[in-house]
Image (cartoon, rainbow, N blue to C red):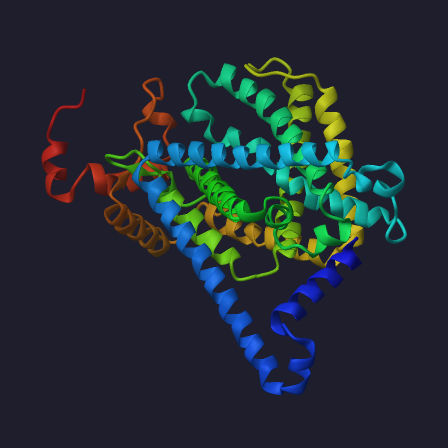
Length: 418
């Protein structure tokens, strides 16, 4: 499958850069001109992606309600488009167009089976289902999370699985495996084949789907950085929210910059391998930690509790996926591991090293103060039951420029303590 994929990509690039084979060969300038056009298209595409990321970051910074409304609208649009694809697939099957669904054709091998490529296929295919854990990042913003979080997961995972599986079934009623691999946007090719003059619906639907996916990632991932900063694992400014809008603007800006850096590579499949391998590595460690805690601390409160059989099954699948993916693509997975390990020196420098030089602490404090003024952010109010002695000392020190101005410091110190 991977060889076919590479061949299909090569054909696509050849067709884009050299629309007419004989003309390109006859005129050397046409090849360079085609390459220039392809480069301009790529630059334009990357620029458009960057503009969309910045725009959605602004929406998330402006209002949580705006961000959730945008997510609701584009999710509904994506589901309607997928419903249209499934309906067209059912119509195709009723017409007898199910050649590639027959077992003898569906399970035909295009190359010798390879366990490593199968694991890599699972790794890339699971990217479509990668949002199953994102809701955990925004638990604090859910109403009655102990009831609504499991309910949302139990509803969303079967729904997404049903929709995606039947959408892929619909695709193969109109396209061969070779066409699927050669297409840069399968839904668009599917629409061109079956929708006729209404084929424009699919490119718009794909764009809206991508728009909603980016918005959801910005909304949830920023909360991950926010929580990490609150625990002291990231710069404390990321744990601040806007004084009026109550949005984590520093965390959103950090997420935006991280996203823009990913646009440096234009190979989407390589990026998926990087992200997928690292994500599943952390998923497995997290779930293994759940089993360890259940064994070492069986009596701690667990508002949401599941049978240990499920995490054990997941860990078995996780081990298969990572081991054989690493064996199949050692360079790509190795680069992913190297990217992850760059966080180790940052951890030792920022978290583990407690007795830092005073000049370093002063620099961080000044940087935090400047960031607060630029973003107009402060720390969220602490819970009523949280004692002052439980507040991190560094956090208390960094709060002083905001809550205790220098001019009034002496005056405040003369007031009697409660």
